[in-house]
Image (cartoon, rainbow, N blue to C red; front, side, top):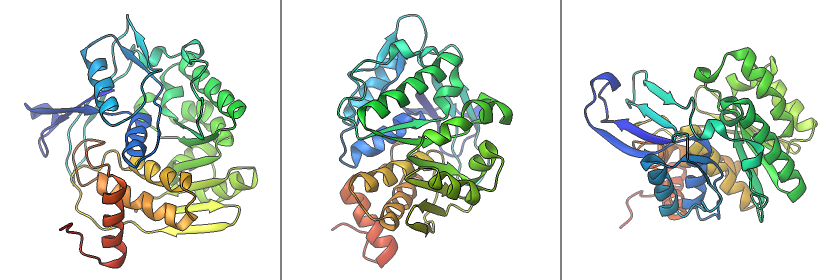
Length: 308
């Protein structure tokens, strides 16, 4: 989606100045991984309009491969309006109904969509957009299995897209397809009707490589076949908390793709999330590897954070 972000601290209904950016769970993760040095392809549908062109331009500028993005001549690009404030409720307005993304269907998935991919990352938002988008999500998982790519999944529950029962019905079954699952504790409980830690441990027993629980206090716990790891959040000033979960996913997947031990991957995930929330928009604070490494050293070892 195109993101229009109100000036910091000003309520959405009083804002007169907006900053243009890109938003959307999978797109945020794509940008985060590209900035961290990985080859990334984003699949999606945009309108044949100025917002769609802006989204493509910004993704290209970050090095994301958009060669297989579809353009819908009839439906518009999705839009997100929101404000940002570190200590009060944030007003988020989605304009997804009837958008090009909501018209996604299996026929829109190119045959070469996953060529060369090691990991397919999905969120629960896409299958909740429409029945055809849910079918396209299932098609992507089938292609990932055929290509030997792992499936990374973040439920990313958005209650404006549907009630708890609808999320459990449509997105709940996808948990079993995830090799790497990154979910909020409340999301796991909603989708499984069980305590989050119990559900995570059982998903690992059933075949998941790793299940990472993101908790309300911003700590995280990872379960794998080798055990359990915990990660505390890094204390940083918050400018804009939206997008922290996607930044965490990008940081974690980067560590996993580079073969880091679980604890190290969790630490990098927490670091990337901490950097993201110190800047406005979902993507402005996403770091390069050098920035991530300097910040992580400052957070964990007390090394001077000023790069001189």
